[in-house]
Length: 137
Image (cartoon, rainbow, N blue to C red; front, side, top):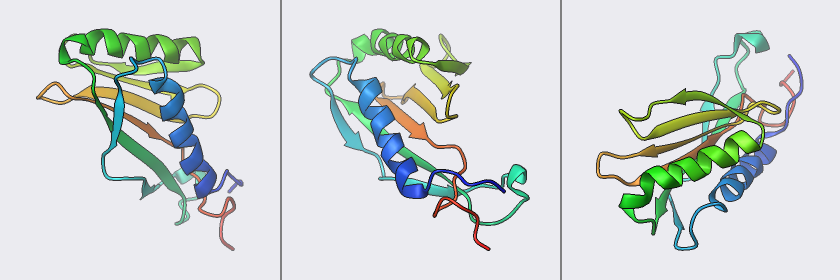
């Protein structure tokens, strides 16, 4: 059971990743929080099945972007991600406007998805981290 970044650092990293990725989108973009930061328990057997580690996540609606530009905006995000060390884990286009990626260096994951109404959202999540950075004794 190895030390990880703590939950606070993971929360900062998730926000940083979203800020970096959305910087490639048009200036009309407004981020609207979708539920705030989450911390979901991990059932990570690599940590011996111990209780305590969490995966931190955050989702935003991408408001202020014309729906007719959704495919181009998703392509801008995908280009940013592939140029910056992410690998595509799932690309559901053209059936669904959804792309999922993982940072090859730190295993943080990101996605962009379209709702049935055509609204785009962006999400980022951390790998499993210990709330205090180390397993509890």
